[in-house]
Structure formats: structure tokens, C-alpha cells
Image (cartoon, rainbow, N blue to C red; front, side):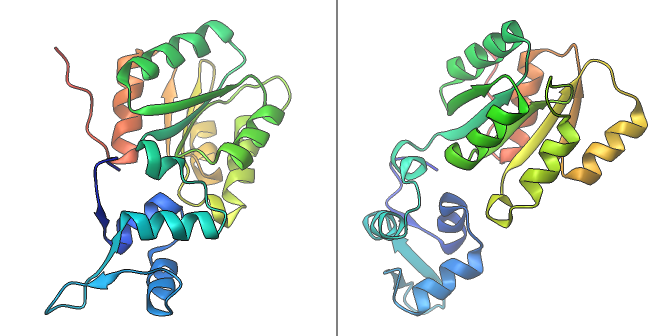
Length: 196
């Protein structure tokens, strides 16, 4: 969401707060979340300052509203690849990036950082990617998290298993970082970077 946006729809507010649109509508209708209706319609609108106050009062992290950046968690035990991906997403400028080198650290980061997107290596030293997907999907507060699994050695039937466990996409290594950024942007429904 743009950091210059001053008024939000219930759908936009839901995405920022990482809750369902119905939750936002309920909070609006019961007065917990202040806003206004568009004259002559049933549409609800929420001013930025009211959304910020609502998030703060309910313990919802406000950084997505403050900086407008998408939160990205990169999980891979290959530090060189992690650095390469981190640098590429950092250059893009639209991402707040954290990294983890194993499943345990990834689990901690998902809970604390609450990313919009996880780029997840399937073959981690302490846990497999399928189990990480299942753990993320078992927490209803993480429903909006998108997951792209990456791996160099995997059979096609395992890819189906990853998708069944909750992965949104799969990319076979090696891949170009530009292609990964495009896939991330598509899943997060933001514009792909302009190639000069």
C-alpha cells in the first residue's frame, strides 16, 4: 500500500491488518474502527489516522502502513544464494527483507515478522519445506502469507505435495533472481519491476 494513501477501503484495510474483510467490516459497524460511508452508497472508507489508531490499539504491527513495503522472508541454508536474493529484492526498494538459514529460525521469523511472502528452500538442514508450509497454513492468522518453494533436486510428484501442504508456487533451481522477483510480485498482486 502506498505510504501517501490517506483513505482505505475495507478490503485494503484488511490486507494491511492481515485479517479478513469481514473482520474489518464488523469492527467498522460496531464502532471499534472509525470511518465514514461514501455519500449515497453503502461503501465504507477508513482514514489513515483511524486505521493507524485501530492497529496500534489492537496490537497489530503498523510498519506495513508506515512504510508501505511488502515483508519478505527468505529461507535457505545456502548463504551465497540468500545474499544474492536479498540484494536483488533490496535494490527493487519495495520490500522489507529478513532471512533465515534453517526451519527453526524461519518459524520464529514467521511468527514475529509476519511476512507477506516467504521464499522457502525445500531442503533445509533441520526440517523439510513441506512441514514449514503445513505449520504456516495451520495458523489461521497467517492465511494471507504467500509461499514460494525453491529447490534444486525434487521430483514432480513432490511439487504436488508441496502445493497440497500450502505452497503457492514452486521454482526449480537454478533460476534467475529477476524471474523470482516477477513471481513474487505476481503473487502479491503488485507491479512487476520495470526492465530498463
